[in-house]
Length: 448
Image 1 (cartoon, rainbow, N blue to C red):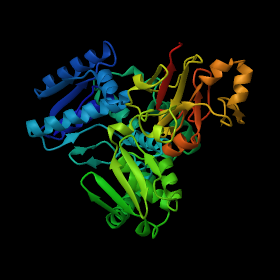
Image 2: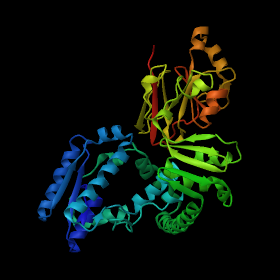
Image 3: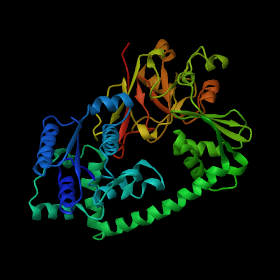
Image 4: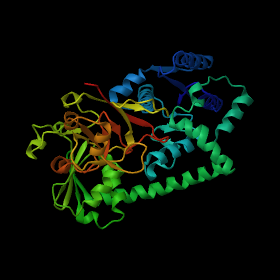
């Protein structure tokens, strides 16, 4: 058994219990170098812990921030990917049967609410499974209070991660603010949640089997391309939910799935894009193919030229922004709950609420948006009057538009997506950052 040991109370409890139970164990520790001084302190503590029992100790050093930046991930996602890849590599190379982590009941409840807020569907509402392939979680039946009592009773040494008590990340805010409130409302909250997650796990199993059966019937594929038979698809309800499950592996979110469902009676040629794939309505089929690089940015030499326009650009998170007509920068960041004072040249949006590709285009007569902080909408032209912009400044104004409308239609008829930002002037309320936000997409337009 390979034990994942961070040095905190939970993993030290797991370490002590597994040793007492007589398992043949080794220790794995990840130094993510995210907390100057503390990260190295934790590593030294785990090395001593393993040495005291003459157990093998495997340590990995990671530049987590660089990995997160290179792969477009939040710090939490990057650390998780690095951690489990390291564990699996060790398991195979060193001949361990299983990897044991110290997740407990409170972790599972926190994960439930994280997934609920992120909209992962029923698949995320069972918390943390007790076993996932070669990873097992022996402490899941027990809560944080049980672990604290065991640590105290056995006088186990441990190290504290001070960031666990700071509401910097969504998980911490759920742990420190939401769950104590729910426990105060319902004294049996933990038992009820454990029962709920068990039932949802069973329901999820039935649900996945049904989706797999329908997928086999309606989805055909040849290599990297797939086709959904619309006639067969119509036999099932609700279409929005089913399309979400069918299209989620290709990077499409729930909002796009609903748009696809509403377009089944539309003429051929309607197209939807995810960060990795293109979906095309083609007569009686929905064709799903990997996005080619030329779809990442449509400029005046490409599709827009065919529509007679030269002011329409598509933006993905990996688009080369140097090709844009304005100096626009974009960065995905983990959200810590604090939005700094932004200048008129900056705008932040909730990453999970954006539909790609985003559209950058000139403003047009009739464009209307909901300014940030306002309950109603107003014409972009009225905003320009308030700002006393010159004719030249108006002519040179750009809009960043959410891709919740068809890109080709946006190019041809002025855009049917939701305006996110009158660039350099005023952000909209759409995809606004909220306490539930975990990642933001930060834009900045350099002053010319």
